[in-house]
Length: 226
Image 1 (tube, one colour):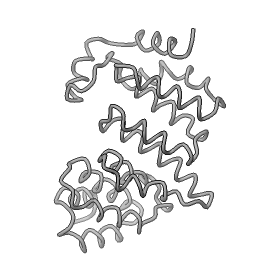
Image 2: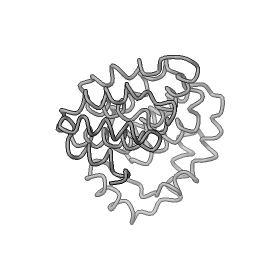
Image 3: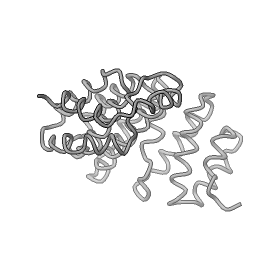
Image 4: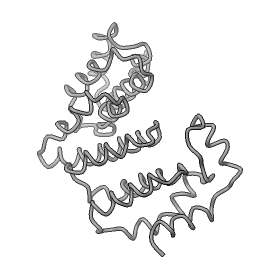
């Protein structure tokens, strides 16, 4: 029995069919579901995914692609769990493959999950002295707004490693867009950095209030003292 057969058995064993319809509705009926909640999904797949330690990035990406092709949304979430668990096997050379995967069956759940993985890879590159942001410049200008969202969000959680100039420039580069998911991403990225550098974010938001959408501005300062 191969990994994907074992994952199918494991997930179907913990599926609650009654959950499937509400989960599908939450995702605006774009995907079908088995009805497996996130904690049960992670528990069911944990040992199988742990067994992939050391298999190499190419094998991980092949497994991710196969999981992405499954109709039920839980399999894409398992793929993201797998890539996150073994993110140290990934390097900057794998960023194009990760971004290509993110564009398939794209919605906020898979895109934001991939943004976290891409961010971990690029932060590791940054700490090695490399220019991780260079891999996001193209994504920031990409015609697919989901890739622009990943670029905007990739520094989430970086704290002191955050390149504030890149973050602020990216926010201004996307500030004119009407797309909700971009406006939300700008606000989220700024709000996250404000946990480390509140004054810098407050000053930036104040200086560029006319350029930022009301949603981005509000989200950026959501946890700032009034």
